[in-house]
Amino acid sequence: MVLVLPACGWQGRAVQAQDRTRAAAHRIDTLERDHARQLNDAAQRRAAQDVPHAWLAGRARPLARELRLPEPLRRRIDATLLYTDRPDLPQLAQRIRRATAIPVRILPDALLPPERFLPRLNGVDALDTHAGTLLRRAELESGPQPLADLLDGLAARLYVHWRYQAGAIEFYRTDTRVFDVRMLAVAAHTRSQLGRSASGKAEGFDHGMQTAMSSGDGNGLAALRARVLPFLSKAGVVSEVTANGGALVVTDLPEILDRIEAYVARENRAATRRVRILLEELTLSRRDRDERGIDWALIFSRASAALNAAGPAAAAGQGAALLGAGVSRGQWRGSQAMLDVLAEAGVSVHRRSIPLLTLNRQPVTHAVHSTFSYVDHVQGGVIGGTTAQPAVVPSISVSQKRETVGTFVTILPDARDDGSILLSIGYDNSYAQPLRTLSFGPADSQLRVQQLNLDGHGTVQQVALRPGQPVLLAGFDARELDSDTRRLTRGAPLLAGGRDSLSDIQQRTVLLITAQLEDGDV
Image 1 (tube, rainbow, N blue to C red):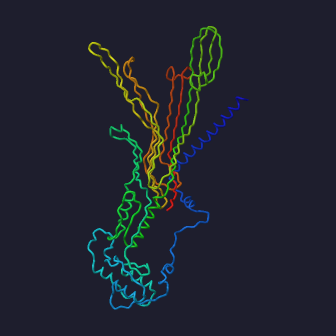
Image 2 (image 1 turned 180 degrees about the vertical axis):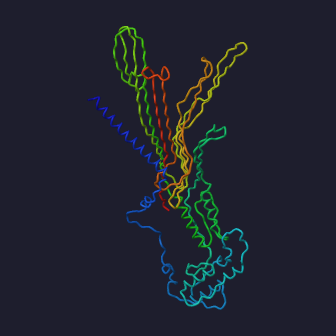
Image 3 (image 1 turned 120 degrees about the vertical axis):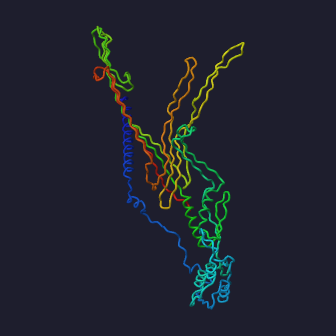
């Protein structure tokens, strides 16, 4: 009973391991088939966008114009401007003040020529002063209308704006706004390199994953300032970028400032998005090994036979069942026939999962590494004595080298407004085989060095994916089939003595990546 209970527990664990193995194999097969067919199910994406709960969506809408007007202009005051000439802005301001008894103020920038606020177009240098003069004069407005509508028409005709501020109607043309830029003060630089190299320093293969951060240079803010410049008019001004700055001060026309505000808000939303990434490496290994052999030792000296059987512990090979028949007495004493059989099968699943979280357009590097040292150079020599004492003292110089192996991942995400995610990925997984010792020189004074053998796999690539959709980045499928037959002569049967061995090793590796978006607080 004591022997049966541990066997039952082991059998249960073996069944669980086989179930997990079959599940992993089914998942790998499914992913490979989906990648081969390039499955793109639009129905599932539409279903994922359906939220079965009550929710509010949409942007805030401004109040009606009648509610935003100042108190003096809310009253229904119809005004009519009568003039025979085409007056300019100062003349109109004077007549409005006389008609409504409301003070009118004109800022200096409202009197500048409109041609100073043309877009920054290449090749447009000459200014049409005649057109600018016509724009600075208003035409007759027919019929009575509310004062607010009258001011809107005059502002549109004269290419200016008006507002009620500090108890007076104010005409202006430019405005100044401060745009907060939500970008990190540190600048991140990333480098991913993998492949063969012709230089001697890399010794034929160069691989490296690195992310460096530096503060105070303001590269992100300077890049945003460069993208804002095309929005400005010829008279528009944007502040210079300073160290550790986080805002842009822009002076230009209000309609241009509105476009810049919308663009900066979109950049802030993109910069504060969080991207959650899951990188998985699945490796499925299967090994089948089968051996069988018969060994005859015919030393028939005396007659008497005995039969014995031994278990795997006494077999020639590890884990092999052995059946032997021998003659221990008689004239065939010492004669024996040995039959050994070995059947081995095993499956292993190795899963490596790397979860990462980073800001949009910010690189992230993850490393799980191990560093070790080994002897790569040994130099021997002798140190001689003086002429009177020619003693010789051996001298040995040993040089060690350090090597780092492990898993290195560098990812740079770029989440777009349409929901897609662009990923730049660098992945390198290297591991060291057991060190081999090489000896040189005579037996009494040998020099030994250690030979290093590194294995690994990796990829550097760019992919586009949808949130929550696993993507197969790379895969590796290797199969090694080895067959060995030993006989006394070619074509002889196994019964005559010999050994047959068959080994089948299969390894399948897939690299998967999944990304999810998390909006910031902008």
